[in-house]
Length: 279
Image (tube, rainbow, N blue to C red; front, side, top):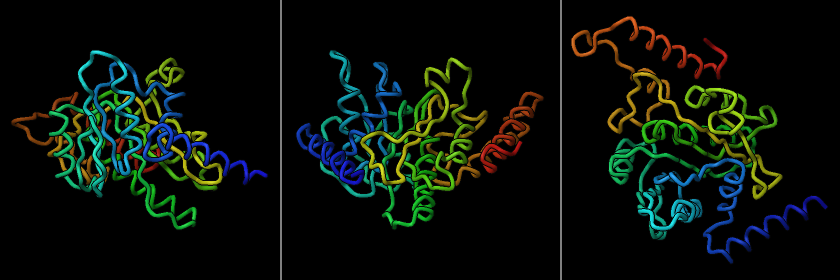
């Protein structure tokens, strides 16, 4: 009985996607996330869709970012290894998200602006082995977030697909790591879901799958972190932590405040390594 219900649910969103013109039923996953989180405020004017093919999430961006009449068209950039059919209002980049060249192309397409929203619905080929699939998905998410560190504006939002395992159904390790970049600033911030990290499984996601989505809000770059497109995006996040440069005594003399900032970054790097458990 439960299995039949799941099939019916999938068919509903498949039929809806056809009738409403979306390229895939996955569009409703982003729309359902938006029902709980205010990820499409009226002042959201640019966004990046990583691993975008076939383009259903980009279609949602076009619709949601251009709802207010008499506004300039939003800047939307879609990136994927494979070319996809053109979408009006979307700049498409065919490239590898681990490549510095791709990051530079995205920033150029955004006219040098940082993105207020970065989303990624990419997934590797599923093997059916939950632990392996979760590991492969985590590596893809790491690549997506590594480039997003260079693309996101302060205060921005990052949303990506994850695969949960029975051993870690709440993705606690990943949540703890990402809080290094998306901290809860205060209780109100948490209650309004304007800052922090959450894991959600939208109702349009198949119940029997380990798929879920991580929603990260209020991006806070680490002090001194080099996050421009020339600072080797695509490297590991530990290397990104190491990009903090306070060693030049002429152009960047070390003051007491700098030392404190360096110590803060080091602590955050340890927290990332230990999933928030090291300090």
